[in-house]
Length: 80
Image (cartoon, rainbow, N blue to C red; front, side, top):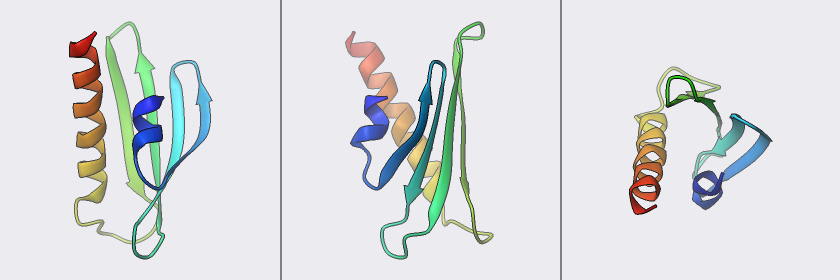
């Protein structure tokens, strides 16, 4: 998935048809967040899970990451 490869500090761990699992590291402390994307062709949606492994708060980092992915995917779909 090109959109994920363009994001900084993201390592794709598993990439199979309809599913991607990646690890995202924070810029300063290197904390690892998990990111999963599952394509649901029947529903025409991509289910996304982005979660911190440690701590209670991420100060909106995961939400911003998901919104960045969503907007980049939308731009690519509208351009094609």
